[in-house]
Length: 371
Image (cartoon, rainbow, N blue to C red):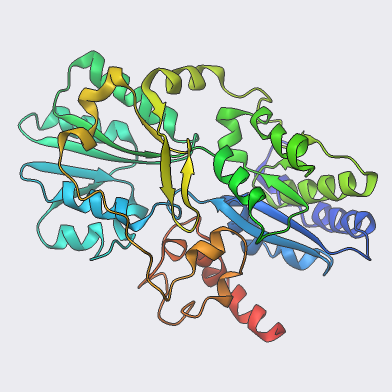
């Protein structure tokens, strides 16, 4: 297949759904986690869950880069944005993520110079255009977006752009998956592996899931037939008693990853001893910081920030949603006090958030009718 409409072919989708029903054990309830928020949105946008047998359940994982940022880090970002002479830059989603006392959008309304950018290179361009101002880039995301930040920092260093710095909140995918698998709260039978992250790290780092925990993994693309085929591959493994890492997304994902991107990341970043995740707490060696060679560009060293841990609002259950313990519609404030227009938690803000997927595609109405 070469064209988008082929990946959304209804007849092929129906054939895959028939094969899925044939592969599923009718006497066993199977729970599969789609790690990436992009998968969650495709599932509910195209109604793929309606094509699955009732005993095959899909649950959401912590693969939304905006959703996992804790409130304390948002407070740190707002504090930097209020520093005199600072131009604070970030992606659009992050401007609406609530901190303990407002959002970056609120800070912008109060007079802070906060600008939305589409890439870290945009932020570097601003720094070169305004050499008398300090420009901070709010870097977020998994290994998917970390290489672009790393390359931007390499360019800033090579060009001597001294008024540019990075507030690094990049995270890695393996530690939170291990934390989930070690959790007694959640029983999983397999994983629809993260397609975007795997374009950089490859499928090999996911082998521990099969080797150490006995769960099958299929790295999946994001089109409807990609996801259906990945579910079929997982059910086939379970039926055959196999436990492997398979790569459905071979047209994009090399099994060993993008070696050049990994080299750049290793040059620029270092692992933090621990990093806080929303809903998952502190996870060892799960976050990235700027390495010593790039310490001059580290905004956390340039500016004094609160650096406090802030508890999520009691009404918000984003943590449970991110861990796959509950579905978004089971949260008490979902669709009422918490909506995309007035979000309480990050899962309702991001374009990859599970709550936003349920809300935008009307899944909450259907789920409530079923209970």
